[in-house]
Length: 314
Length: 295
Image 1 (cartoon, rainbow over the protein chains, first blue to last red):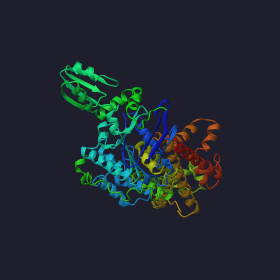
Image 2 (cartoon, chains in turn orange, yellow):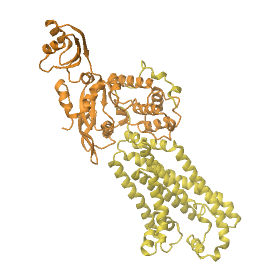
Image 3 (cartoon, one colour):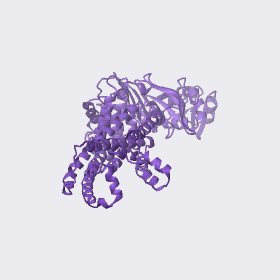
Image 4 (cartoon, rainbow over the protein chains, first blue to last red):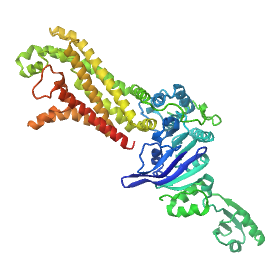
């Protein structure tokens, strides 16, 4: 479990991470989503003790990273595919890292095999593609068989097969009860990998909720309704919290009523509807909505979802 | 390199990564100092660039031994009429050949000092530091381990290559009727002091690399300290410049190896202290900054 409390990082006059608090629970994949420069990597570096927080604190399993007796066995991290001296071979890189914790050569070979690096392990990292570098970074992260795995943009540069592999690996590790925290700026990737999502924008947590809730957005259902009596239908559907948009002469988009309710009202009032389609926002839309305006966003999330919502900048 | 030539059998989603201990993580040995030292030694010997620099040092030292052996021979024939040469000879008690084995240390110090810079600066320029300090979050053990590796390697390499240089120079000197006893106490003293000195320069390099975090910048400051500063202070006239020159790290070897005290140099104990300070101050500064700064 990773716990951040009021974590802040200020570089000069730029606040990269602004008093964020969140908890990454064990046993599920937690996605860390945000546009480039939102503060994802800085937050992850602070978790790993590489950057010192300006204020606030972050612990892993209750202890600051640097205080762990065997850090590599506690947390594995891929912070940057290029956290390697490119003049060294992949095998020797892993061997040197393993030596700090007396991790046997057998395990080094195991993670090389696991990440599909067997054929290039004896070659210098200099010649590696971005995808190869990512695999080596993941191999290094798994070296200590850690309880907590932090992966910063793990699918960057991977081929489709590699993307699927990382996705399954993340889910598998979480199913084993491990804490899995992975960042991405690719919303579509998060939608299929993460169980829980922490969205960050301009250094603040915008949302912290199960992925389904974020996709549902306001928690209000939307439906597309086609009818030959649009005006009459609009009148009978109108009410508190219901918004209706006329998109085409006979096409309405109704927000705030679930399809069953719309159908019932229409039936009771003898209005014929010839299409009733529940609409679900894609994560992408939800994300755009979330990040387009941080202020609007606060009310947006808290209004609908009675779930833990972290408003940034407390 | 494309991914197509890589074994992808392990990527089958139905066979995810095997785990050794399930979720019982955090169990097992952590980064004790000996393990970190072992890790840094692996890192030291697995870089081709490091091995090339070590080989260059050996080559330069032995090459200069041979060259100086020959030069000394021809020089001895005309030395009687040259006052400057006579003074240099006097510093070694009239023994011309004694400094031949260590004649390459001016270059050895440059190569091994640069190696010291690179060992630390490359951590930061390549991003390796993130891996290193994720494994050793206390940071200082990794730095001290690197320091030990580079100091020991520089000392041993300088000592061995000086001895080899002496062996190569022996027959050359012999042809000029000059005698060199590699087992004499003055020979051993020269070899040991020179090796300690080169090791000290490597340590200064490591500290500079850690402070500056940039390979070119680190090497340039090293060159500035050991090559530019002495020449600049020689050009500047006056007692102040003359006094400062005595305290440059590069001017501490001569007083420590001279048979008798030379004018305008430090006493042996002073020279040792000055060289020690040139190592300790940057090393401590590097350690403080390494602990404090973000990686």
